[in-house]
Picture 1 (tube, rainbow, N blue to C red):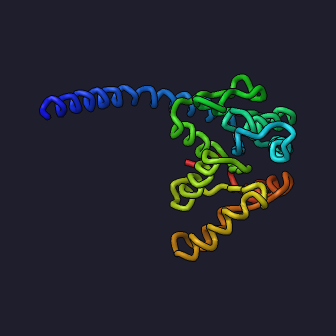
Picture 2 (picture 1 turned 90 degrees about the horizontal axis):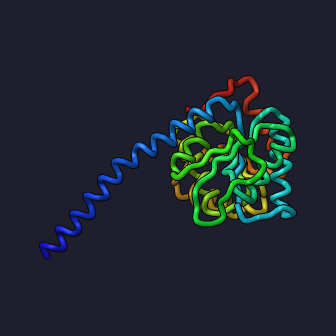
Picture 3 (picture 1 turned 135 degrees about the horizontal axis):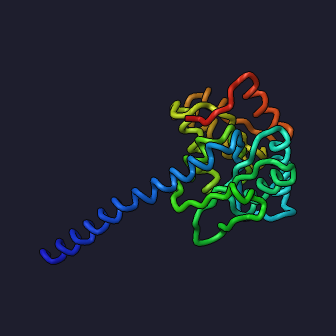
Amino acid sequence: MQMRKEQHSKGWNEIKTNDSWAIFKIMGEFVNGFEKMSVIGPCVSIFGSARVREGHPYYDLAVKISKKIAEAGYGVITGGGPGIMEAGNKGANLAGGTSVGLNIELPFEQHDNPYIDDDKSLDFDYFFVRKVMFVKYSQGFVVMPGGFGTLDEFFEALTLIQTHKIHTFPIILVGTEFWKGLMDWIKNTLVEAGNISAKDLDLIKLVDTEDEVVEIIDAFYKGRTLSPNF
């Protein structure tokens, strides 16, 4: 028993040492991200599934949306990978706009897409550092149909805005058919149970077209100064 305790203690101490050194790597990712993102200018982030391919309706719609966003004068930020992320960067690239990719090291799915500006491709090991970059430097979130990662970004932004940890910015769900079930659950379960306020629903816009996306973003920022969110 005593030997087992000593083995556990030794392993725990090794973990603590590794955790301490990891701080410097984390700091490095923050510094690199802040330095590169702070000079890019106003951008809108586009999220969605990495698994859809060109020719899929949502892929093609993401290209149209990001092209329209770039034509309106905003840069486009994506997670840098395939699927909707690739479509987002592709649309910005087609419009001659700023195309940013915040890539993450993953065992599957993730790889740089070819539509990111050469000087605006950033690589991250830590999801939480990457999420800070999205939240800090986005003037809006455009959330296309996706999986757990897409939902994570969506609810992270909602929580930070709801709790006044960051400035409010537009959060736009694209695809009424896809998101209807989730929105019904939020209204009929979360609101009814008193877990969120009915006014929190105003933080979310649900649309189906690229024109609606840009109209919401432009209307929100009319007369406002564009700046990082915290």
